[in-house]
Each structure stands twice: as C-alpha cells, then as structure tokens.
Length: 121
Image (tube, rainbow, N blue to C red; front, side, top):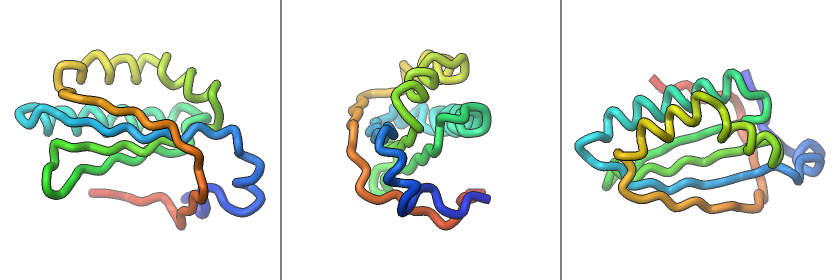
C-alpha cells in the first residue's frame, strides 16, 4: 500500500523527477484492444521498474477515444530506461496503428499527493 506518493520534504528532495502527460486519440474501432495493451504495459512498468513511480490513464467521458496518461519517473535516467524496455517497445509497436494522434507534455510538478494505491476493477 502506498500512503503518500511525494509530499513535504520528500517532494523537495525529488526535483529531478520527470512528470509527463501524454494525450492520445485512439481509433474507436481498436479502443478496447488499446486499453488492454496500455493497462498491461503500465502494470508491468510499475511492478518491475523501480524508477517508474506512477502511471495513471483516464479516458474522456464524452469521448472515450481520448486517453490521457499521467506519468511520474524518478529522474531522466528512469524515464530513458523505461522507454528502452521490452514491454514498452512492445506497447509502442503494437499500438502504433491504433493511435490517431499523440501529444506529449513535459511538466514541472507543483504538488503530488496520494492516499494509497487505487484499485480499479
């Protein structure tokens, strides 16, 4: 169970974190397949990569083909390691034809708080 992702002095010590937002539009005909592949890749990344601190994916209620992914990595090295993993490359290669558009935003974190790991069914 994760109690607090980063807060107070822990946040101050992690200014090297990489926080990115990916905005994707997915081909509606392939949406369910995309979501399944994305979920598997995210679960694997968080489980096996120490530098992947958190990954969250949500879809727009009005247009479920619009997916937003919120990514937090310990630092640049963790991010660069992540994009070289077999599971990430498999995700990219498999979903390439499903993604109609992709926008990547690099951000500066202001506050990152969490009570515990969320479980979706």
